[in-house]
Image (tube, rainbow, N blue to C red; front, side, top):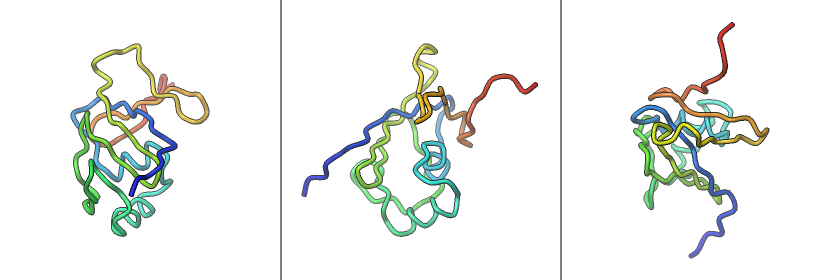
Length: 108
C-alpha cells in the first residue's frame, strides 16, 4: 500500500537529538505532550519504516518521522546557519538540544 505524502518538511535541530514527543510538539503535529503520548501509544507514529511506541526515543539528524501523510525529515542546524525552518506563519524556528525548545530572539 502506498501512502500519498502531502507534507514532507525538514525540521532543523541544534543538538545531537530531540525526543520523539518533543519533536511532535515542536513541528506542530500535536499541541500537548498528552496528544503526543496518545498518538505514539496508538502506533500512529513511524520512525523510518517502523512504528515507534517509545515517547522518549532519541530522534537524530537523518531520521525520518511520519504521521499519516506528514513526513518530518530531521536535519542538523549546525551544518549551515543560513538554512531555516519556516513554520506555518513564516517565522524561522529551530529545535534546540534534546528538549526541543524553540529558539527565539532576545530574552529582553
